[in-house]
Figure 1 (tube, helix red, strand yellow):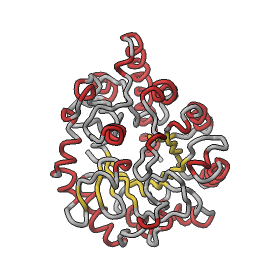
Figure 2 (spheres, helix red, strand yellow; figure 1 turned 180 degrees about the vertical axis):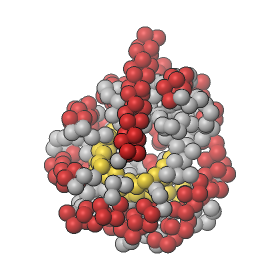
Figure 3 (tube, one colour; figure 1 turned 45 degrees about the vertical axis):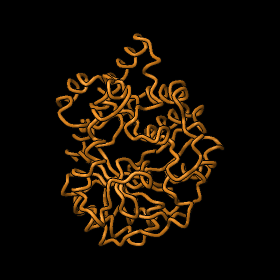
Length: 369
């Protein structure tokens, strides 16, 4: 469990995105970031001990953290795989060369694009062309890149086309459900009908970026037959993680508060790493031990055949019902006919099988290179 840590180093940012999830547009929240040594002592070393293998650095804008390059070097030397979620504005030729020298190919950079039209600047603070230019620069240096695309009412009708554009570039993507983590704009969240009509059908078109979304209609028996890993042998699927990633990853904000998902940070906490050891927070706190046991879910998520492989979105449950364990209010499984559900399950099985095969090919390529 907990193979991935989403680590926010700072809330400082040189953008002012109006619906910023991390609160970086609120300067009163810019304090509380910790020193490099504190992060090593209270986060990185304990994360290594509990079996975390991937650190995804974020902010704010992580390149504004004063000791970021030194921290990247140390994280790399500790054996972690490294990701950076950035707005890209501080990525220059010199900086990219410096990072490559430190990390080699141990780096995945995530750039955010919410749409490929003039509406992108409304949520990402810059026109799409800005990010495409940064993307071209990164690719010219051989940097691994993916695109993070936030899903909401604001881009639901262009979402499918955006994914097609990303696939044409042969890049993976990561979908992020819009949430009012540090914004009062709850009306920008998608609902069940938007998910059913626009977002989910687009996600089901390809196996690229296929593992982290819900509803995820993979029967546990299919997970077992495709991966060779016994279904339900762990509290949540791990190799690979699918559906809702709560229990596979965790988040720590700049103040040291631990949440089961980055989009729940600042609103839900299982403890603070500067007051309680990380291992105790992850494996002994009431929140983490109950949220990772999906028998504690409520409503249709509790009785669903896909409870283990999907789990429902805990973010949507929390922000729409104020109950972290409630059924996912955006799930439309109860509106499907038997024939429709069977078709979705068959398509999910096919894409998941291709995804696992692609993963194995990539692992073999890395091993031989």
